[in-house]
Length: 430
Image 1 (cartoon, rainbow, N blue to C red):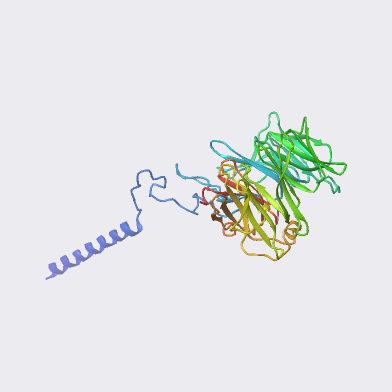
Image 2 (cartoon, rainbow, N blue to C red):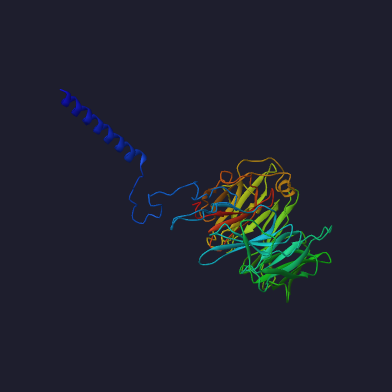
């Protein structure tokens, strides 16, 4: 009897020991999950997120955050680029982009100091290219290689801006200051240039950005010139009584001249041949007219003041000579045409209507909008929401000064509320 009780006790002890070992092994011990073929994660078959040594990148619009630190297993993406990215939180005085086989580069000039910065689509690094102090640059147009630009500057207390040609000149024995925030340390370029003489009304680069159209106020008349991009060897193109105009050069054979829009004044759009100087009236009279012409010159998105001082937006077909009212309602100042897909136009469209006198109140800054990005096909009239913006950013975005890169992979724009610069990945947003 005693032997039997001893054997039963021993058997129970063995069972408890086995159960304890199984609990530790299966629930507390190390998990070994076979990695799938081609898995680039950790040896356990997963990728750590928001953990020490893991990917700390965010999806918000901070632009200069999201770099990866710590010991990262080979093969894990080390940088997560937000689809909506803040490139510059300080006011910008103009920008432009170029695309290579591997990346898209964007350069801009700081409005306050005149420093030039560069960002790339495959990196969160902001590179300081030039820290030459050229203050109060509020607008600029860049050449194709992003090595020079034409800019408007307010000097001291002058109310009339001066226009300058500026070029990035390489320094010798200098290296770039590449930081996660714009730096004021030594930079690889100096900014050098010259003033463009005369009272400049407006200027625009040719589609290939090798030439410059400049309109001057000479003795109360508007005089147009075509020159090299550096504003040398200008050729006189025309003389006109118009002096309050906005200019662009959307197509090889078209310089677009739009009278400045106002609720109380009728506006007109004219096409000027850059070789002959011949004018053609395209649109008008329309109150509060603002226009954007696509790169073929076949389509124009325009806005005008509606019956109740609101916005009317239309797309005009040069071939048909007719206007189709656009599905969206926005100012043409908030739009840009694609450079690769030339029939597509991208616009910042207010999420909700805001009462006011358009476009005057928006120009004066007494009226602001909360915008979304929409894409409209000029041929089919189809409209598609690209991004609501507010879900991806840390601030309200009142979009203007838009531009796509040459392959329409990215949309760049400025926020009128604080003059910050942003990029939106159009591929990710599809």
